[in-house]
Image (cartoon, rainbow, N blue to C red; front, side, top):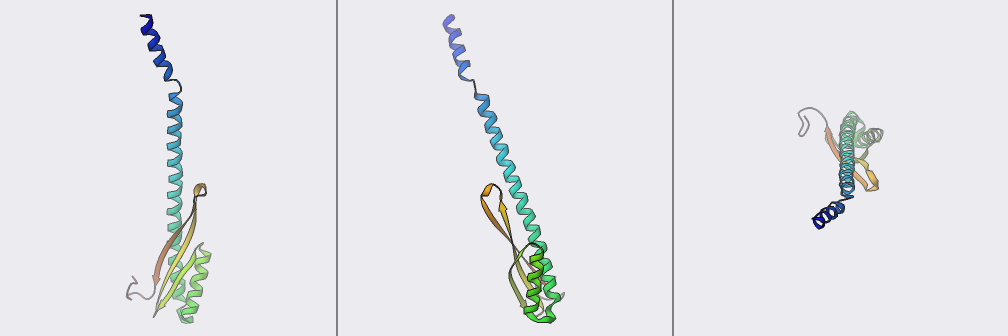
Length: 131
């Protein structure tokens, strides 16, 4: 009987500290999930900022079409810069202005940067590609 009790005690003693491992593993999962949520939220915010900057740049460029393609694209670039984006492309086709803008986003924990792109068109209603 004494031998059986010793054996039970030795098995119980080997589980000591297992709770610490489980708590650390759970904390690591929560931490990684939090970092992922922050990263996804940042990308979504950058996407909205890029969409708004592209829309505003295209509209501003279309408003300056009377100044020619150079004037329209210069205005679109200035508006994109003021909106926190960088004008990646500007093209004028007749009376339709097409722009593409980029917003750079820093990824948490020093992983790097992500570039979010967005495109927009502006021109008279009824033209191809313009709603």
